[in-house]
Image (cartoon, rainbow, N blue to C red; front, top):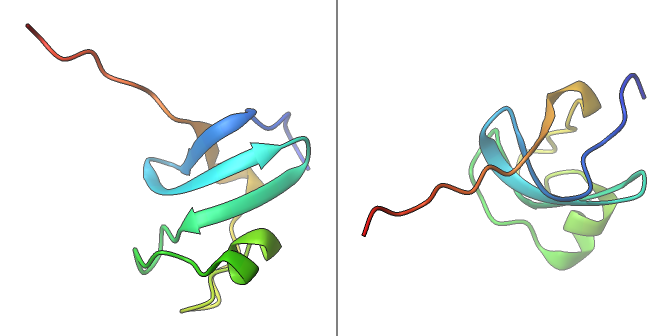
Length: 69
């Protein structure tokens, strides 16, 4: 791993959805095919649909936007 991973909710350069716990990556939504991952596949960090393997360099924390009132 080249950099320290952000903990909690994360994306892959703004696409997909993952959760990072320590050095463990759980990929919920694939950034390549946009499919929701099955729980067993999500725990492996690999897409169960297209077999996408994420690059740890692409992991970014989720940015929450404020909604204007």
